Length: 428
Ligand SMILES: Cc1ncc(COP(=O)(O)O)c(C=O)c1O
Image 1: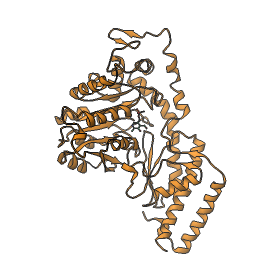
Image 2 (image 1 turned 90 degrees about the vertical axis):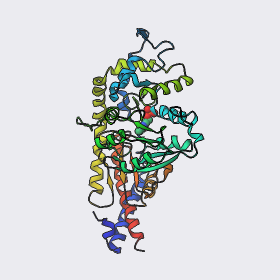
Image 3 (image 1 turned 60 degrees about the vertical axis):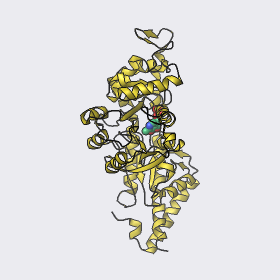
Image 4 (image 1 turned 30 degrees about the vertical axis):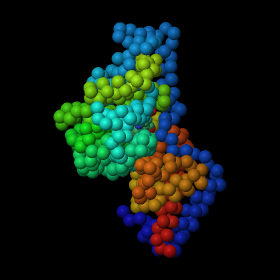
């Protein structure tokens, strides 16, 4: 679709810019203070989990046959918490470690383990020279920060409508032994919201890495975060690996952060029996056992996958109107102009927006001037370097619907103004 501003003659373009600047000035004068940057639940969503707090009290059973929450023990988590965690992601509980509240922490610890001690008995990465990591982009900035922190070279991989560019992934993973990992958010990816197709999952499951210490970091953060009854279906990767005859290839992560209370829940990692034995030994150096009162509270509250799904439906009822408002405002304001496209996710926490080349930084800074905070442009790419400066992550859940609507009205004007000014630049 042709860019409307590029199709205008110079007088038309100048008139459009004048009008858009006037609209922007009106927003500036309104002294707005809005935030579309935070990918976190609203207060109303966290309130849904408040009843969990009543389930742990002085009368609660804190230990039983083979488990204790009130003492050391269960170094890989309470058995009932491991069963719940395993059921949520569809794997065998014996291959799951439940540990602490943050899955990002577990991802960090496993990268740190590879870097300092080595994976599966191989040399630590710090001794292997420059090691590399694949980063499907746009992606989650905190993933990229973990690997960058250890001096690992982050390599962007193009994201397509059904997942990362698997030809490129296979080419790099299967030929370059310095590639040690890849970050993946396979369902409702942060920020694109897409879910990997069965074909993409099968291709991941059948990778034959050049490096024996390569692992896929499968961050299934949004595994149960559907906003419609018919959610996206993600093929379960460990069963795909069994079909492909591969093993020791994937660490899968998830947490209850966006199910109950972010930062105060339970997180877990699943892997092959030998990877999990190794992780268990590594984590055993850090602590005697994980915090288990929170695990117990979650098991009592959520019970099983049906309980989780029922709870997530309540989240969906709150979140869905936010996503639908973004779609409506963007379609009404920018649809058909040929200057932008955006994702239409069925779940998760984000919408990925792309404007014209060279626009994202300008839009984000204009938005800040007009009183609306967005995720910094470039954040969704390794080292903050979006090669075409197009991508902006929209986080619609946290603001109230009223604030979100206002923020999107400003956004539409900012995108149009920046697009028109970019078109004008090519004429002068
Ligand atoms: C893809 C992804 N993984 C992990 C996290 C953080 O999870 P946790 O709170 O379990 O560390 C987030 C938070 O936004 C996320 O988007």
